[in-house]
Amino acid sequence: MFKGIGNLASMFRNMQDMGGKMEQITETLKSARVTGAAGGELVKVEANGLGQVLKISIDQVLREDADWEMIQDLLVAAFNDVTTKAKEKHVAAMSELTGGFDLPGLGDALNRMGMGPGPSGS
Image 1: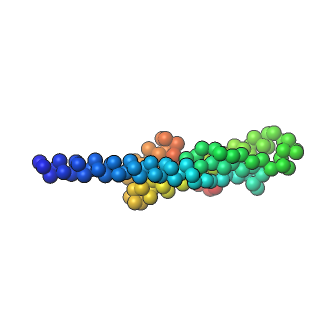
Image 2: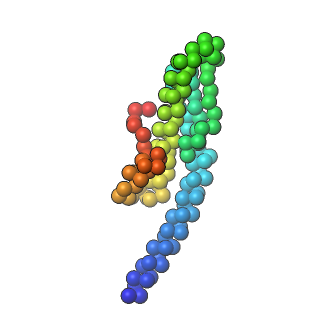
Image 3: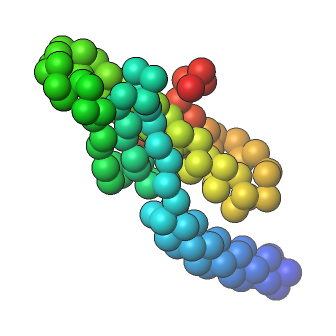
């Protein structure tokens, strides 16, 4: 019976350690940068590792032509690209936290939260 209590205490300590590591990962992801691009880099979107958009760049050529439909399409593609890269960075950080150990249901949980890997091909 006492052995079970010791195991429970150990489990709680491990959970506290993991919580601290999660905070570190969050801070690391906040400072990490990913860039998504579209149209041969005519449109670029920069985000942090959490997927928060920090900057949008539209090449002078597109601004001069003012082809708003094309700009809108390229912005969507660049946002999708940067979101995929941010998710990949997040999944890599989570994998590092778990020591590469695949936790059953982790991928599904991250996908439901919008943090799982997106479609590859970027």
